[in-house]
Length: 388
Ligand code: ATP
Ligand code: MG
Image 1: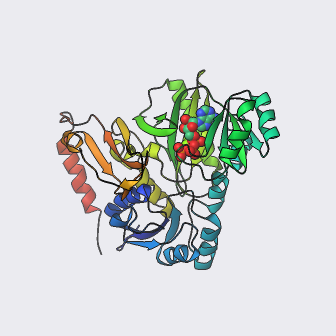
Image 2 (image 1 turned 60 degrees about the vertical axis):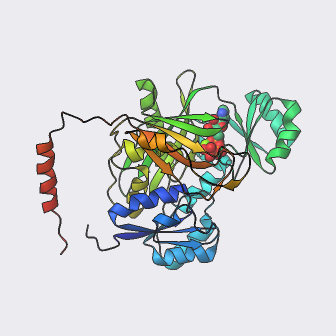
Image 3 (image 1 turned 120 degrees about the vertical axis):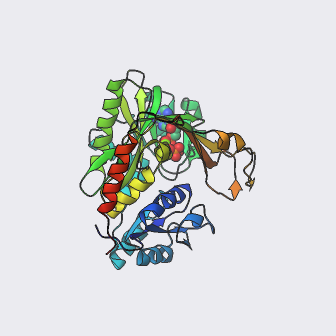
């Protein structure tokens, strides 16, 4: 590969914290990002080349991105697959992951059907349009059920457990519009795997334990504290999911481990995912760098464990929206193996994801690293580089 500066320009629909961390990963590789986001001065803005202010379905904004980019990608499911596809055709810009993959994932019913058709285990589910559908689903799958809006849900919004027939009307009103019902899984724990699809290879990261409270991700433990048989089954299922997806990029695969050690797929995210934030410190190639390598068709990076890691989300601890102010970080900053990530959001809202911290435990001198050998290898590698 020969590189000039920038080595590549990547256009990203969405400029939230995922875009910000993608921008942080892009810098060392000489990659420049341009993001489009409706919020002026979005979280990614300070670390990218440029922000175009526009909605996730704004044709002009996506077109402006594509005209300056070598490849178009997205960091949010609200990116409009139709507009991206149109712009991709008009400007001859590749889009990764494929807009078809995004369409499939945007609709949780379509997503579950695709998984089922590929014989990938999911919770049992039914399409729900009417109260009668929901009552019939409860009779077949058993109460309680998990009712989910087909589109637009995030951080548990758009989901509602339904205890029995008495709650059917109220639940449907709350969800509004077209929905699906899933059997309520009695899980032992929730797991996730980040998987990367490159030009001609696939790689998965170590299985991660995801700890949710009130349906919001609070913490991660990597690698997950699970039996080897569960770990290998989770990896196997993850590869089956990756096989199903069109287009290069990083994917987040959310899993349930049931009480009897079975794995089923909760949902897929066609982008970097909260469950992979620990990879920044815990691996040599973070999920963000991996995504950039993948969409550009570059060789994928090492997804193996560098060090164990625990990540905790920093969520908005307010009752109502207000200007964000970060305080009390001294303890984190004084902890040798703690890394603080602050997303720079101007506003804090109740339970909004404002940042995270990761601990690796790796803060003592590692006595048995052969530094002479490292130096020799590093020097040899510099010799292979030229700027002619
Ligand atoms: P995210 O929080 O990842 O943005 P989301 O809002 O799209 O996701 P889901 O992942 O579908 O929602 O659900 C959020 C959480 O609700 C899950 O992580 C899990 O804890 C719980 N949950 C979802 N579906 C089920 C189910 N069928 N049975 C039991 N619990 C479930
Ligand atoms: Mg989820």
